[in-house]
Image (tube, rainbow, N blue to C red; front, side, top):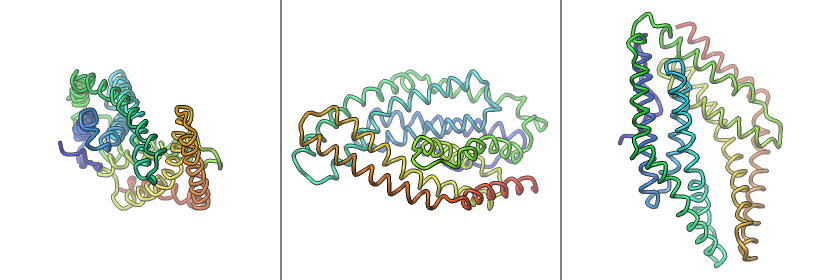
Length: 311
């Protein structure tokens, strides 16, 4: 399978909005199916399959949000539930993959080797959840059937006429983007030490980023790229904070699962290390994410909207 592209082709006419939506949604659903099968059958060969599966479900979820006007609510709800269930089935597997990778890179000693062995054993158990999803959604064709329903619903002939109510592609893209960017701007200023708020901002930023990739072909190129680059830069900085925060929680949970004092000490060191890295990343972020930069982020979005109006 060819990987689903980040950036979609332009919808050049009114009716092309529906056809582009159908094609894009199908592509995103195919990516979920592909990575679910790979994660279920070949995770030992490459743990990145599990990671890409989680990303694929998020991208598919944003595609649903972007094209929400074209999809029946009941069908959209079933798709959202499916994406959530698939992503959740891979949560433990992904966490354990990250832990195993970190332990494998740590200095060799008996404590680390024994802990790695325990993590790998837990990873084998976690794989069953991924396989269960594969049996339901791939072998059971549940997701493929939903994809067929989406294609039929979105390609309703009534939506393929020049007079369709969704307007020209640029108008549609601008309208959907405004809706998606709203919660991002609302939560753009997060208080220091509010890790939950930073996590939510990162999630909202991911949704905005994925939406821009879907809608870019129908938006003015230069202002879209400028705004996109700022969103990506913010995402990267937030990612360092949330990654260290998640890692500290991950190591901390394992302290309760082991009994050997040397392994407990190793895990406690790992927690302290991640907390220190989290502190440094947070300090750098809040020094960088100034009021001026927040204003500039809004300004770049406003420039994008103005360019849409001018076309």
